[in-house]
Length: 223
Image 1 (spheres, rainbow, N blue to C red):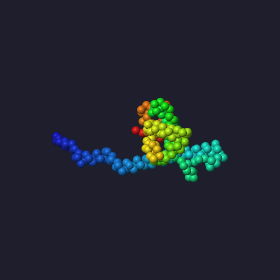
Image 2: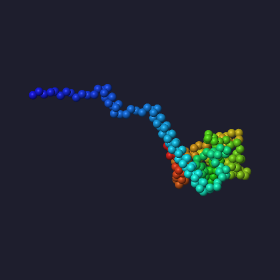
Image 3: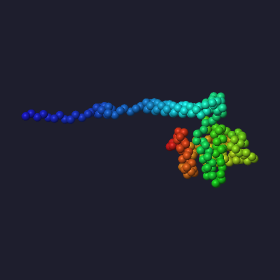
Image 4: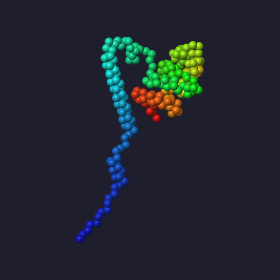
């Protein structure tokens, strides 16, 4: 009886191993391709957001026409009307931010109530997209904030000092006064830091947080 010797098991050469591994595992996606994909996702998300806005606008217009069928649009102040000038951009949560500033002003004034929220609103009504404000006439700005009388400028400066101490603004002096040049920081970031220090009541912060979510502001959830 003839027995055949078993041939030794063949082992893959290093070259073959590398080839098999390349087939089994998908090739790495080049960075340029990844960037292009991410950019495409961003464009898609923006289109979706624009579609939602357009849908909300259409819905609002239909509801407005139903409730006020005889409305003359000339009686409205519409930002989309190119003939209208003199508007600014501010967070939709500004009403809550103003109230929050009034509530926590005592934290930096030894318990003295200083309603600096109105002063903050005046700054936002004057700011452009650089986050920079120049106050050449403090008396006029104080009047806008509701401060009259002989101490109007003094009150204005006291409230600016509160906003500075809380971290909402920074100030630099100029020929028109010690608070002529002002820088407005992101209010969400300031409030988030103040909340981390325990300076804000949780009910107040939760209300702002909820409203921020409603308007799709992500500042309070950013790392």
